[in-house]
Image (cartoon, rainbow, N blue to C red):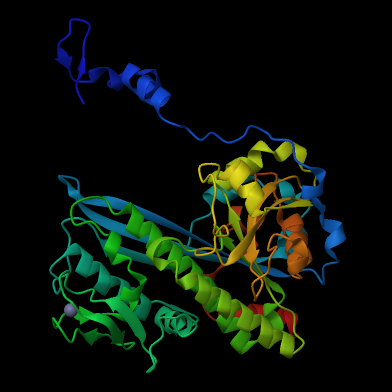
Length: 451
Ligand SMILES: [Zn+2]
């Protein structure tokens, strides 16, 4: 936008090039006119809001292994001379960490950072997606190419020989998108923008639209393609796909271990990089994942077996920033439940009043702040209770909490602020990339079952 220079002539805002943005007069003026929702600086924390973790019950036998998941999306120019011709790239890394081996080391909390940086990042899944100006030979647009590629990824990538597509369909069957014949209901035709077909039943192998004849895939129900741009960067769509893949991969390991060695799964902690939540068009999957977790918990409990710790750890965002702001007010080994009142008064203050519970349509986990024995201030989510409760922030609804906090205490690291060892040490000497396939079961079985 042009602005007037001192002589009154319109001038392009060349000055933003060498003056910090907030020094720019136009920016300053705008900032004064905007309402900026800064977080409450270091509020007084009512001591009743903080709970000593020792009062929540005792934890069971220590968890022996941790499986952690982390993804990264990138988009790059396909050729240097054509910067708008782009290719997307996603990696989902998974790592199995032997806790006793790791923590048994003297000064394990002071592991040399160089070891970590030098460790190669081995991916469980690496995949390439088309970007602007790039299409599959059989698809007319970038969006349609994405639909086909996402389906191919789900069909061709597997966890311990279980295709991701099978895990996806397992989740669909726990959602309101399941069709009477075992497929998935796609709400509106994804093949042609103007097609009038609605509520199309799509079997696992895909179908041709009854109205326009376009190809429709079961994974179209994820609606990732809707955020794909034909001409611009596709960071949003790549991020969405990565989040879905991380969480489906975690579900796949929970499913695999509980099917093959149900006695083992309770000795493994599952750590997700990020909250236990799905946002945007994929948010519907959150109810399916929660239903999966509770079915798993029920099955294990019926067999009198231990249930696994599942925890999401957030490294950034408004909650983690708030946690950092109140860090000094929370003693070690204390948990802070987050009620809706607290969330809307102190963290998400831009939502002045909200009638719906926080995270109702997106989160399958309940959020807490926890300060570990090592002093990390963590923003965590753990699976919500099976049924609705009036006070979901009350820690007593979560019998798995003592085991979860005990695990977090053990794996805190002074290396990284508010990080935990298995996530930070993605591939240290004590970790095994999950790529090694069925070794996972062999390793776990050998030790835990004495095989
Ligand atoms: Zn159609």
